[in-house]
Image 1: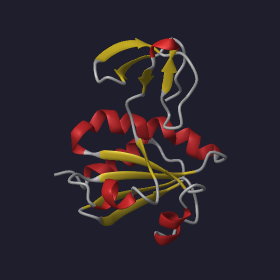
Image 2: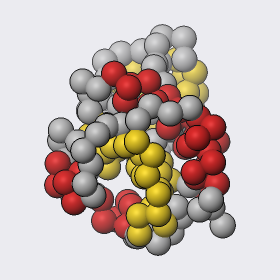
Image 3: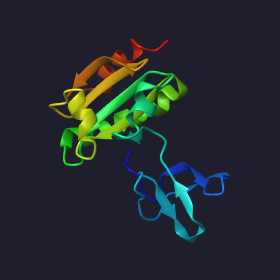
Image 4: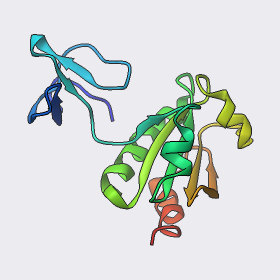
Length: 151
């Protein structure tokens, strides 16, 4: 999901109060944006980041199935499916965790799971790799894959 100045998203003030506002300002390192001088951090709903150090906690120990998008910033097909991954994260809500692993920044996990082509989307359940889809595929393909592993 590309954010622009007219995108309305849920925001969280650093103090913890919630509000809605229009997105503006520079991007943060986690994909959000800082709005004006009020220090409001805005983060689009969708898949969150995962890396080598957070892999075990966010993926292997997850109480719900996890959809993992292995991607890199220079990969055109990865950018094509990124909005689909975010849509699935929003649509499935608490039934599915969706995360994105940048293979350039976290080569350890990518190597461990034999990622040779990106985008590769994997589904994990109870810490076990259940399925993988390689390439930029339609949303319907990812939905069918995910549906097999939901309780």
